[in-house]
Length: 468
Ligand code: ARG
Image (cartoon, rainbow, N blue to C red; front, side, top):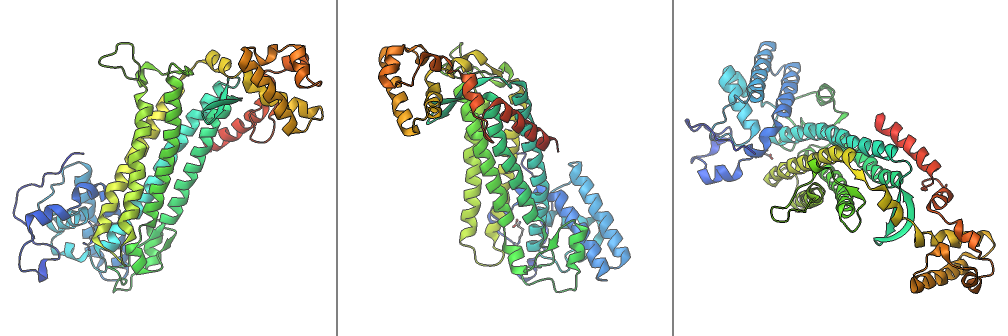
């Protein structure tokens, strides 16, 4: 991140300096400043101030002329910030102070009226909620982008079979589309978590003042409507001290990250020589500076690795909050450091995976070979059940055959009649020849199962959802 170098210039008196006899020590100024981080809040800070100006005019705390002057001033400040022309000054301790300071330079003493009935405590709580709402929408859209990539890839590989795993041991054949749609389900829940977080963030804290409520009759419901909030907060102490929506956002980020990390882990495994299930596009892989033959899945690894930081962000904010008495405490300033980092990180991970997924090449033959053989043992047991054998007994019979196969190196399908008869009179070579991955898939017609018909149905559902 580009560091801000405040322009040299006269040190300005602090907005709160009236009761102080000594200037703030430079080391304290540097230590307490949040400008480096919270300057990213400026569009929200300006939007909040503009709404506050309208509320002050309605409450006749500002004349219409003063209101227009402040509005024009704030818009000019926003343009300066947009264009990167805004000059930060030493002593601008955060973005709120910097904007108000500049506004006052532009409009004169009327600038001093902007903060009527407002504290930085409800101001920063407002900015944060505006930011959270925008960010929930942005993350939701990014999640949907990756969902779409997975759905499209599933649709393009409807007939591909691979082993499904439990304990990372080959278990039963599944469709690749089924596997990809499993990841899509996780993301669909992630998207709904961001949506839920939006709903909880959708509350106006402005008007809470420093902690006890503004001392002027401001119409908070009106301000809430003005800024598109569903409601105004019900308790001023809570409004300035609460960071639940931030926690929920970080929880949604952390869970999303964990999902992306699990997907990343599979890509790493699948790209290995041992699995050989995918070929990474060259544009999404890296080489080794020493070993010329290497092609490394660094993107997937970094997605997995960055998850640590996102989980850390959630834990950091939970820990910051856990000992805080009501209402605002300066500790809360630390929220933005982790929020901004987590949001950027998750956004980056989603974007890079969305770009990479359509370019994965699946090694269908390798997957199919790995999905055959002993993976059909359950289907054989199921076939015995259809002939009246209790499942537990069928399991035991097939277990005996598996043991025999492992000892002799013979494939399940090739066992001879004598061996079969030794295990059960019901077993025939015809039954064994009927064992194929395709039939194994077709049996699993239950809702949510891996049969081609059911996967096609789930795919259509997913397509409808990601297009909405
Ligand atoms: N920079 C502060 C923050 O992010 C703004 C609120 C400051 N309030 C105060 N009472 N010092 O939390």
